[in-house]
Image (cartoon, rainbow, N blue to C red):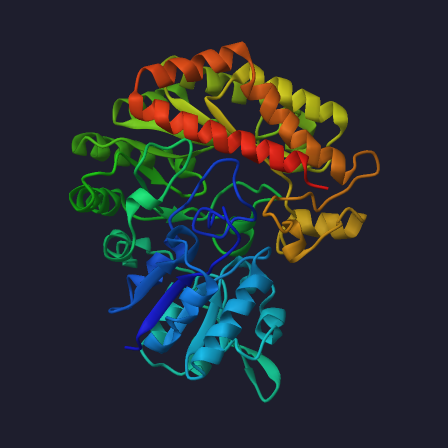
Length: 474
């Protein structure tokens, strides 16, 4: 077995790694997700090491210093961070020319040929689901014989046959032992989750067809492939013993509630363990299921509302009706389930009027906290193809993020400019949070807990710095 480094490369200050997948920009408050997509193959390679440079505040020099300690290095990359990550690859190769370096992630899965050719220091890229491909390479199998990888040979790019998609997800080992070995839970923060928290996947893929969503259209697919409830419960039981300090477990599946009977079965098992947990959900879970989840430890749902305009939801194939969303949200409020709602500005059909409609919608349904993003047309998505076809695309790749780390609009419409969409994000945040009702709710939350008081005050300072820095951005 080759001595293998799994690396989440360094980036700009505040870059959060994003849901294990190198999100395109820094957040409005300090946020760090677990690098689960790297931890999974790391769990399959004995003696490996997982290094999360953004979280551990490691510089390029710090990472390069590791190069001579390993024979194989696997780096997770993304469209916005790709060229920065290539510089890391080249510096590591210069320090240790014998180091075999491979890249993984949605970007190289979609742009495999260009990725391989981006630098002579890149030995291969692993497309799509890469867990077993990396395991085979680490075991010493020649790259030419590994399905699902691309590499250079005689000046041209060779694409090995596609690797069969994994359906028996119980074949994957637990990631929590890798977390325990290489990571520190206290280093990971998400504004809407309790601290410290721990996140992992119980399945891959999503049945929804949202045109902007990267993972189902590139790596995960549109079939929700899941670990068995017993397997999930066993890992959480183990994690509870390994990490007694963890206050909340988060299931990072695209849509954990895609399979309601399974979600209820897992919830009952978690209830027996007495843990607090949260997950991603679509805004259509029936009241009866929500109650089962709540009664068995569910605290929070992360819900992608995207827009308050029905036509935009149709345009992006969200498969959701506003009246269903309102009823679901009311049910959560009745049951005491906290909601972190995510919204996207600049989706096809967006106008000044629909932005106003979405802001009003958000204040009416009143999730506890929100995240507002700009539509990001990633290569490999239907939104990207639409943007190219219609002449909406203004930026590609690394240009999705400016030097300070803020996400910028990559789209522009005839009646709605990039600048207007960029400024609308701050307007949305201010209109949502600077309301008497919301200020009162957050104040009461702080008064109930000294730890929450300290945390919200810190986050408030970070949030104001975020807004002020955006306003100074040209």
